[in-house]
Structure formats: C-alpha cells, structure tokens
Image (cartoon, rainbow, N blue to C red; front, side):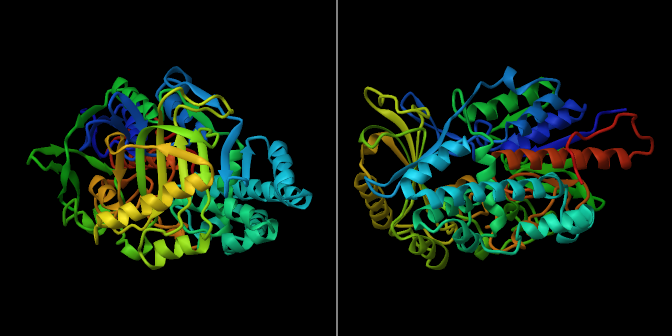
Length: 513
C-alpha cells in the first residue's frame, strides 16, 4: 500500500511541527515555502555578516517542543541549546523609573516593593496566584483541546470545572481586573502589556490573558544561535524523518476533486497531488481566496476590523550608550490609552509608542556592553492596514523620531545609520504574509468570545487542515507548535478512519479533550 501524501503550505512553526509528526508516522510529507528558509514569522534579517532575529524573541513552554522532538524519536536538547534566564525583562518609564521582573516570584515581589511599595508587592503575589489558577484551569480543556467551545469547557470539567472556570472570571476585561491587583498605574501598564503578546489591546482583551504572566514565570530561555535556530532544527528533524522541503515555491491554489482536497498548484503552474493539505498561513489568506476559490469557503471570513496588531520594526547593528540593556527591554509609553486609540481606532502609527528592544548580544545580567556595535530589534505596535494603505515616508520618519527620542529620555542612545538599519512596516508584513494587512497574530483577542472564534485544525473541506497562530490555540511560538500537533493528530485520525482497512498503529501524540 502506498504511503499517504500530505502537502503543507508554509514552513512556519505550525507547519514544521505538523511536518515532523506526520513524517514520523510514515506519511509522505512535502512542505512548500515561498521564502528561502524555514521559520515563517520566526525569520532573521541579514545586515552585513550579522544575523538578527526579526520575529519572535522570547522562548517559553519548552515542553511543547520536547514533545514534538520526542514524537520523532529525538530530543530537543540534541538539537538546540537552551539557557534559562533569571531576569525576564527590564522595564523603564523614564530614566529614573526602572523595574526588573524575575523568573523567581519572590525576587520580583522584592523589586516591586522597592519600586512601588510593600502593598503593591503583596498584591503582586496575589496576582501571581491568580495567573497560575487561570493557566491550570485552561491548559487541558482549552489550550490542549482540539476545538474547545464555551459549552465544552463547562461540560467536560463537571461541577468542579465549572467552579474553577467561574473563579478565573472569563468574562472580565483584563484592564479592569488588573486594577484589582495594582494601584500603581505603572504596574497596571506593565502587566497589561501581556495582551500585546496576542496582538491585542489591554483595554479590550479578556482577563484570561493573565495566563501569559504565569507562562513567563515558569521560565524563559535563550536559544543559542537565535530563535531562527529552532526553526532550522525542526526542519532538519522533519527531513530526517523523511519530509521533503521546497523553498522558493509559492502555493497558488488548493486543488479539489470529488468534494475533497486533491493537492495544490504552485505559482509556476506545477501541480502537486496530495491526499491532504495543511495550510500553515493566516486563515485570512485562505478565506479571501488567495489559495483558490474552491478552498475559500473552508475557513471563516475574517473582517479587517478584527485583526490583531501589526508592527513597525527597526532591525539594526549599532553602538549604544547609557541605558543598561538586557536581552529583553520595554520602554513604556507616557500615554497608554492614546497609544491603543491611535492603533485600533484611528488606524495610525502611535504618537507615544511603547517600545520593545531585544539586544541580541546581551544576556540577563548587567554585563558590559559589546565593545563596538550590537544587534538590536526595536519594535513598536502598529495598525494592521498594510493592504489598505502605505504609511508615507514622513509618517514613518515621525514615528521613528518619536521612538528613538523616547529611548533617549529613558537614557538609551542608539547610534544608528541608514546603512545598518532595516525598517519593516505593516505594508512589508502584508507582503511577507498576504491577506493579513500586516497583522502578526491572526485575530485580536478582544472580548471573551474571541478565543473561541479561532478555527480548529479541521475545516469544512475534507482533507484540508489548518495550523499556525491564526488558528486554535492562538498566537505565540509554543501555541503555533501546538496547532501543528493538533493538525497532525486530526489528519492522522481521519486517514485511519477513511481507510477500508485501517493500519494497526495508533496515531496522535497530542493530549486532547
């Protein structure tokens, strides 16, 4: 009997995880990727001889990847070197107002006590307990589940599960709940920022996003060689398991026959027959018809008004002075409400942006800065309008001036030059990830229903599956990997059930409810 063949569109983290699991189970896997390397949003920019992570920079939940590697008979440690960090991030509001958060809750509480007083330190400890409760309540019935619904969360957990769900206040807005724990507006702002990890506004996101704080408290790691090293390791593992990768190959159309998926056509006209297709792209690319009219109805239509944040980034090699950078640094806006009003209500670049700076030659300690230049990723949030309008040069320059002036007010001078800087706009992200407008996280998680609107792995078209940050369980590196595992698990189960004579193997590997 011939091996089943699966084509995967996109070598992002979700597609890579699916490729590993499917190939490890004997499936003939071919991955088509229009870029010249794996990773998707986990990409890197080359400036001279410097390779700089230009996508995700924070690595958490390593157990997700340990499970992926284990499913292929390998281990994460054999492919990637991880170093745990003690200091999660350094935060600044002005040159005088700085606060470090640590993986150790007690150290963070002490720092918060010195920064904002003993009462805030006590409230922080209570906040941590709440964040842990939110995560534990949602891990099995939501994060690991194939396609959770509000009904399944209450039904599967029984009376105890219903009580646990009620305790985490799933309908409450994040910003309001943070006000219960933090009276200092700077701390409310700091922990509200976790909503942006899902591409959302802290003023519209649900309180359940507190679980992001718990995830970071359980550990953040540095990946030796950069985050892109993880993508290459997954691609290499998939190849070892038998998968084939076609880089520089762009999917143009998903082919159908007899009411089910039959393969795909590349922009070159080449056709690839397949028993199933996994789309590791934003679902907006599928539903908008960019992958063919026949497949478009298989995914829900995503209105542009529900898109998540985009970004304006500067990837650069420059000498710095002043502020003692760590690997992860956040410089907060002095007008937080105005920042998100600019982005989500006025569709404009923020006049007072919050700035994330990843100093990729630094660690988590106050070591001396590099002798000359260092690799930096500077990011501000931006509206996802890259398919509707292009910000003109004056708008970009104005935001750039506002950004680097704020860094200087906080004590950081970046001696950048145009030759050593790559600027990426929402329009650029739209070109990289079509159909998104530059949105980097799929749909925004605004309101309690938003998390349930993300589609699961299965679609309305038999043989067509979804993976990636725009699908369940959501955006972020480990969540995208989980989506790939869910897609592989669903696909393998369907292949078995559709055979006249099923193989004896038991497929899967992802815990589902």
